[in-house]
Length: 414
Image: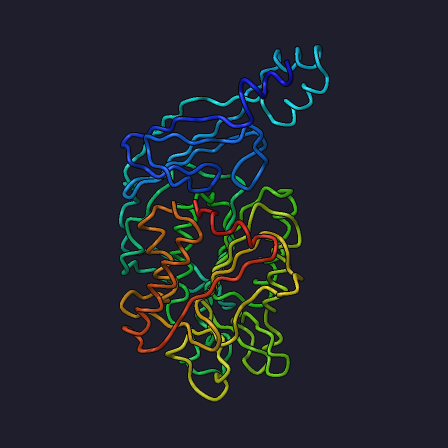
């Protein structure tokens, strides 16, 4: 009998998928099967490894509106005795069975329980004191949680030792540069960074000790923090997941048009003394990592040297990954606006409008949101609300490294 395992079992297997409650969409290895529970899916016995599954592993995910996604991983068992006799009796049929994966078997029935989207949340804290280094001792900064996204933050029950966060909130430029007027400051940048820190720890599972957090950071402080992040990524040997957030000013160099993040002690007259955005990305991707996600709610203001910046927190040069692939790694950048648009504040919520809707989605989903869903939500909300609130266009943008073009949309925040 030729290739008995292939004849009797075939190269595919039917698997019944049930859920409680029923009516959930069935995904296998990250792909929508267009089936609902209870349903039957046909899986390939020899499953190649992908971002979602290991080799010869089937990952079943069920999704239903109003419920958290539920996942089950099934590693193939090997019919070793059958394969043994195949090779003993007939070498070539045995090779056929091996190539077809007929000796691999998965569970015939998978049952998954869906939990409603209800989250444990932290208690509402009216004020939090954060001490900000100013160069003249310490200055008391009061984070008054006045926005709805600052309160009842969803809490994940787990902390992940290889998750890290690098967070900058540069607001007070005038205290560090005596020639600048008060309007040069970036409204609510410290609130933004403080709230993002809480979501990283409480919702995204970043241990408190894994957070690098700086408010009103000078050039030296920013470079030291970026260098530390670089070393942590190197030390974790590809296991690190890094969330990076920046709120503050940025400027284009007048000659090269390169974009710079601006420490609080760098004058707009000398933009090239800031943090070159391209170099910033290169530091974050120099060594392999699980992924690096960057959120930029920054102010690039070409007219800043001639007029005030009270109304603008905007990006006038697009933060981007080089199209020629100079920056590799697993990097995704969510930036607050496109082209020469401004990235504006949401004064009623005391946050940048981009940061507000970023946190709003994290709160509503408990962090259980794909990057594609997050991008769609932020783009829709910010584009509409910026016109209604600030009477100006603002269209957020996502830039992705060449190594992540095919997979980034399926990544999840939590």
